[in-house]
Length: 94
Image (cartoon, rainbow, N blue to C red; front, side):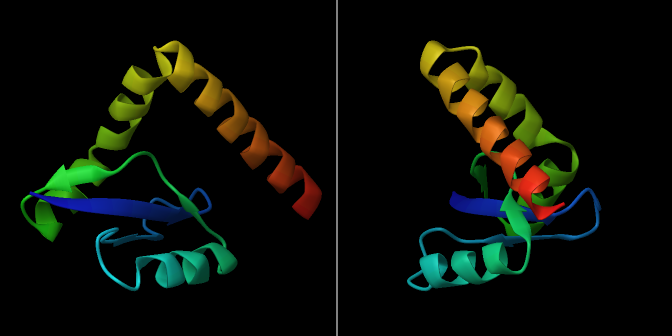
């Protein structure tokens, strides 16, 4: 089963892409996407094919993963700081 990390640009549901975190160029490609205004969307998605990963992503699978992770103490702390960072980043851009 392959692992995928999805990125979304703004609130546009159609402006998304994904990378394979196991590829040699992952960190470089991720940096390029972040510089273009994309943000990491959720946790990794595990799927047998790219099409299955996209289907899971579009069905908001990542949201369920985040909710589950946030229900733990460590996950809650992580998501608190993650969301605070996103808020401050957006506030600074304005």
